[in-house]
Image (cartoon, rainbow over all chains, first blue to last red; front, side):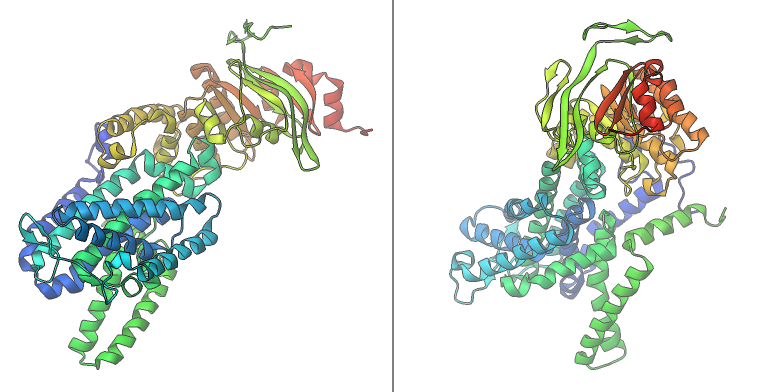
Length: 358
Length: 272
């Protein structure tokens, strides 16, 4: 009734190839973009931005990055936290070394640096697969955090061992540092996320994405039809690293403002992003958003309900929160192992027929 | 006897060209096990060449040598008149050799369309940046590839399952999708490893028709392994018979049928 493909005819292959082939999807997408860019910036305050929107936007970028590597190319990575740290420290070094260059360029360069680092740690993937590769990337996680804690050059020899984001502006508006406006940081991250998501979508719907998925589904068959496994895996690591690095740079410069490798980019971060894509849906860009939203919103929501509405003590609520989130994750994986994205697909299939089931 | 460059016309009016691929004294060992022992044969342009033999004769190993999975310890492979150095399977694929597998090797998580589009891989040149922004060659090639793929989809009569994930398809259709993916590469040689294994009579007839049509319409050279003797004798122009890694017969179906070694191999005599 509301969601249908009937009557939505396509007369060219280009039309059939587009990101949202169904008209309803397309309009919904425009509506979401309009909401994000034109309405939300006027409504939000510091609490909303710091508790919900910034973490959601930044984790979405990281989840898209990891989803390309794990969901599309099938290479499990537990090094996401470490790679985010590379983005953060890369961005910090660039920001302090070249204060006159735009922060946007620093963030992109930090992504590029992370891409290269990611490729280096991805090289073992040519020989090892599955769990063993996961262990190899785990080594990257620990090594990188150790590196950023132990080598003072990375934190500019500061006494605390922390890195602090200096104030930087875009078009004269501050986006990093202590005096930022809520809407400015929000829009900065939203623009980057939108571009990242579009790039990720373009890559995954075209020949490059097919190569990655071919390697994921059956590497022998992929090779026999001409996929170079070396190139496919390395490119997945590079692109994934680029996105994860951007997420790390934003996480440090825009969201945290001050960071320390072990605390901010530890192994828990790797697992958090991995859970996001598993819950959201492996091999789906929408799933990356859904997973990030789920794991960012759920704790905030539970806290508000338990502490705010029910008036429970904060420490009790904090522990209950862990139990409930953990329980929900397990329940979710049992009920829908392919994640929120699959749930969304099933809902759409149902809606296509609704209200006539046959 | 024909020369390598000679061509001839078959009884049903197809022109068979010169030798496009020649295997010379191929020997393949796995440790102490000799899978293929000193085998030579050739494949001519435009013909349907069958490789038959009892289980474990080394047929699939032979196909794997052609497609680059195994590099033989001895012997040479000549492709289009040139000695082929040992190369990786994806390099062989780029030279225009496509294949299907005995146990279907499709990408289960992708749709039929995406699976077949993957076959167009080396017909697209767009680099990562063009693809990232979906501009220039990326956009044009996607549409051009789609046109070729749609023709193959029409040809193999799988229009209705275009956007179905491959994992949901029944066995017979999967076999057809796999053939479509190999065809999408527009190969000069198509290798089929038991294209009719596990099919009923009707499905076998369909598949035979597709193989003949492919050969007829696209002029694709086909090398196939098959166990169904009726099918092999009907389809193929020439047959290689293998047993215990050795070649025991080579020729037209009629010649092979009357070859005493072949009859022994299939009916069984005491090996000395």
